[in-house]
Length: 250
Image (cartoon, rainbow, N blue to C red; front, side, top):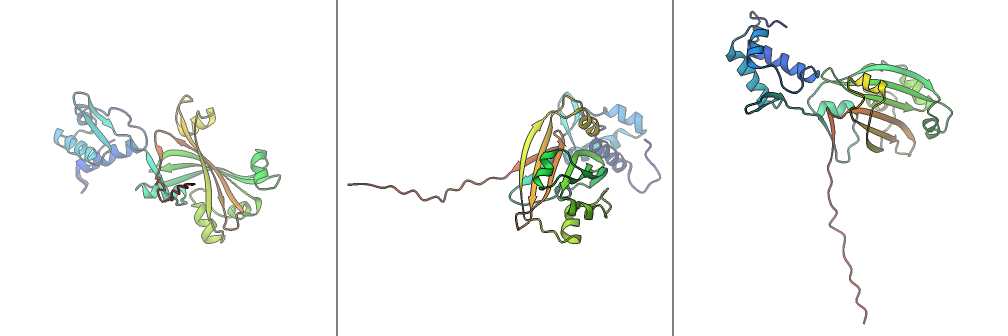
């Protein structure tokens, strides 16, 4: 990677952007190269390197550990739960990152039978996508729909589409409420390869069933997240308004 000394963008800003992108892509993990290594690699001054590192530390992409060096400050995307039904795209945008998707498969399937039974049919429409945040692989998303809705979705470009927006704005489907289960699992060999992680890594798996106001099942989605890049925060409030009645008998 060469920095452009003739660019109107200062060298320290170019270097900052490069290191930040490498972090988001997962190419920089743990301890980053030393000042000397960065100076030699990018042919810049020590001042340029230090200014770039200081910016990334201030923005929480890096952290300095006394006597040990400078390390990537892992900041998983946080999905905040407080009663709002949001899509993956909306959660990534709320984190200040660029969402993305890559379509792996779309079509009619009849297995697993447990999914078909949920839609009271022998088959269903299946969409499988890789999900990204700032070009970094974040999750594998597997969506299941009944055939009627699925065939309508098939008319759209599902590679980058926000499916919730298609359902609500183009197909007139109202999404009302959902139930979601969260588990921690060990990925299959196939999923580990797609996510770019080792087979021994843990993944965060969510399964959501989304319903219309009439309680009709619209979607079942199973999402497998990289646990080192995604976290779910649940906001809770204790109900202390319950009245206490004491009965005294004579």
